[in-house]
Image 1 (cartoon, one colour):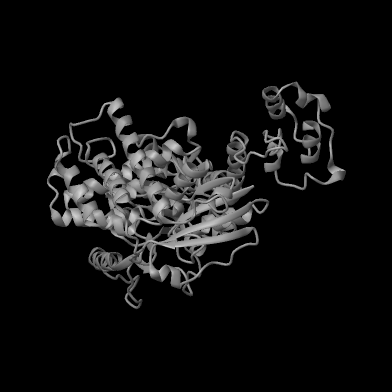
Image 2 (cartoon, rainbow, N blue to C red):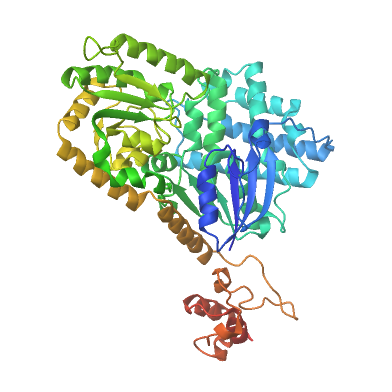
Length: 583
């Protein structure tokens, strides 16, 4: 089977989101061939280079989203009219109130109106793609005055939602530029029969822009599309750029919402990484029959030693591990630890992690100042050196060489986040056999099941009470830790992830009709020209492996329609045997 793996800002680049997951998937499914189609987000990402690629990767094609593109293409009058019509329809779909728009307010679309606007968006999107294919590209046209004026007309038209009507010229220019970048994959030359059209399946490693080439491959070449989302791109958009004007946020949210709905509608199968992502996808219109929850696979080997020796942990130490940023709510954790210290004076808190960007660095300084204020350095005696019960550390040093050592140093792992997707750090703690106390955000409850304690977010008192309860009950701590390790090894390993996707690949291909019709000498379709078993890995054309087809040579002569049904019900045989039966 030949898979076209679509990524954005990730694999095969060294520093990219979901890069490690993609690498494990490609290496684990070595029986298949992979072609990589990667969209890069920044110049620095490309400068860092690629990870070493396994031999099953046959082709790598890349395209940047970060650089300005001037295609120097001058449209004729007919092409300009086509562009104005398609872009105007696209803008109208974005300015109409609907579920994909957070500012729709009481103006809700009916089911029929929603389907109409979804069809309008899809027709405009594929119309622009066909124009780009005919004329050689779209970037100049998408940045032109024609695009800005089309967006302005849509914002001022009757029926446009309030935020769109309030858009000013700077807002329109910003939205036009952002749409040009998001629609840049329409101008790529990836959609020919010898490129993406030659793969058996497109697998988008995320939604949004990464899935757009898969939509076009399906539109132009009927290639089935599989979409995997471990972090829903639409949710990410809602959480970013809070300082933008309401018009910009509203129009871009409408675009991402419409694109997500179209992606889910056209995908053969959608694989969310957890129930939290699945709810987002259902809210955006994903059909439940297409959804298959596949938890992200994580390597359990680095945490095996800590998981097999839980007695080595300090029974009075709590550990927090992760990226330091405001969403992790370390302030609440520090206030909770103040109450824990009053109940258990010998307890200690280790905060292990590096800041995430300038905002994270400022937040770390604030947390250190708060810890110094809440817990003045205290000495155990008149001749001892005072120390703070809260320590801020980073994995990789002499005391904590790895994240596994950080988890192993404490008897209890704490998560205090107010925003969380899939809690990978919590799963790592489960691999280490540690009891956990977590806030009820994102997919936390789904991850831990009944193997840890869960409290409301931004509630230091509840967090403190749960931690004290486990610190005072070592037997309960041990039971929860053992159950957590067993659950993690059953659900969240690399092996289960690879096995799940292998089955999904075969499921999609088993119900996908052959796209390459082979003709005989008379010009008629050749029966069994591309048999179903051709998609099954292995050397099926070896003469020594031939098996007689059930039913004998007369099976295929009973009529073409009946022969196709018989082939689907027949056990897997060799290609040579099937072709012999067809003759």
